Length: 262
Image 1 (cartoon, rainbow, N blue to C red):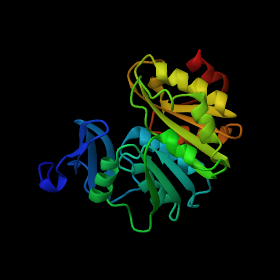
Image 2: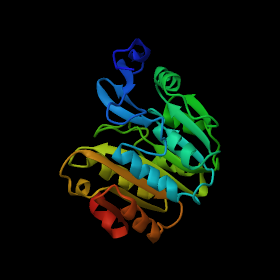
Image 3: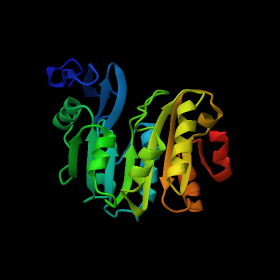
């Protein structure tokens, strides 16, 4: 089906006033691209949902891999649904997982689920609304193994989410060994990254930052993955993430992370 095919006609998103489109990826058979406002936002491989095309999402997937024994079902909360790429990945690698997805745009979630259905057997509960409001409706001690925040897309971020209090609320809904994963898209100055590292470190016992090595030098815009843990950061996780890539990769923890916050 081509992007012009009426089966993939754009969908108007009332909250942002933008249009969303879904069309086949001409380079990867069985894959589709979600575009919002003319910019690519998500990539889904329906044929192989365990394969993740976007680099930053692959890094998040590797963190999820470490959150529990391989193949064990987990409880995952996605704040910012997109095309549900990571939800599909979790279902593929950890069948039977219980997942929740929060998305501000009702039309977007309906559009994605209609055009790109979830794999059979997926246990996914969706919720339309603001990420912090939705989080407040969940009981403390909800027992999520992973909470993934994928909302920030530039130096500007919603102040009620980009703060210590929000991370504290998210941490309270993690299982004892759970992890909070935050994707931060930022400009070379890393202003948002610095503020979010500081907030996350105040809210959780330990934190790490994972990205393409050049990102920490502030050479170009891109994504840095922040990970908050309820226990001290396991040294073996650093080795695992560096080995899994994508390469070149860097993981900053402890005093090495201090240079991000200054």
